Image: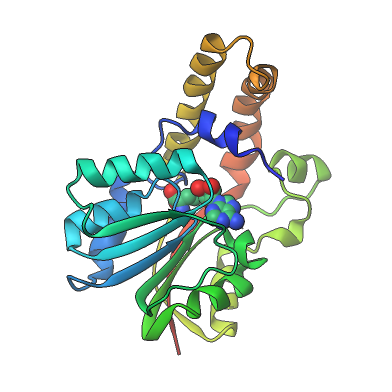
Length: 248
Ligand SMILES: C[S@@+](CC[C@H](N)C(=O)[O-])C[C@H]1O[C@@H](n2cnc3c(N)ncnc32)[C@H](O)[C@@H]1O
C-alpha cells in the first residue's frame, strides 16, 4: 500500500495530479460541451481541479471523492477561491465501490483505475452512478513504447508488461467493453515534465525543512534516483490519457 503522506509531500504544489496541463484540462472541459447544471461524479478527485474549474467555466455541479485529506483541503480551498462552493462538494471516502445517490451526467475516474480493480471494473463502477446515455471519463496510462527488458519495466514502476496496453490497444479495449470513444486528450513529453519535474523542487524544499521527519530519508532517496529514472523510462515509454466514453 502506498503512503498517502508521500503524495501529499511531493504533490503539495500540484492542482492536477496527472500529466495533463491546466490548458489540456480546460480544453477537454470545453470540448465536452456539458450543459450548465450537468452533474459530475469524480472518483479519486485529488485536489478537485477538474470539478472546480469546470464548475467555474461551464456551470456544472459535482461531487468529488478521495481518500487524501490534504488534497481534499486543497480542493475545498480552490472551490472557495473560484467561487463555486455552492456547485461542488468533496467527501473523504474510499472510492472503491462508491455509487452516487442520484444518477449523474458524467462519471469520472482520472488516474486511479485500481479503485475498480482495473479499467473494466472501474467502468462498471462508474456506470452504476450514470444516467442512461451519460458519459464516462477515465484517465489511464498506456505504453508509448512497449518495454522489452525487465530493467525498463522496473524503471517504469510496473510489475508486468501486461499491466498497460498500447494506445490503440486501450482504445480497442473500450470498444470491446461496449463503449464508443468520443474524445481523448493525451500527455505529451512536455506535459509529463510539468507533472514530474516540479515534484523534485517540492521534495527538496520539504526535505530541507523537515530534517527529522520519519519520511526525510525516503524523500531524499527518491530525489536522488527519480530525475534520471524519469528521463530514461517513464518519459520515453509511458503514455497517459483521459478518454471520454459513451455506451453503444
Ligand atoms: C493520480 S491521482 C489523480 C487525482 C485526480 N483525479 C487528478 O487527476 O488530479 C490519484 C488519486 O487517487 C486517490 N485515491 C487512491 N486510492 C483511492 C481510493 N481507494 N479511494 C479514493 N481515492 C483514492 C489519491 O488520493 C489521489 O488523489
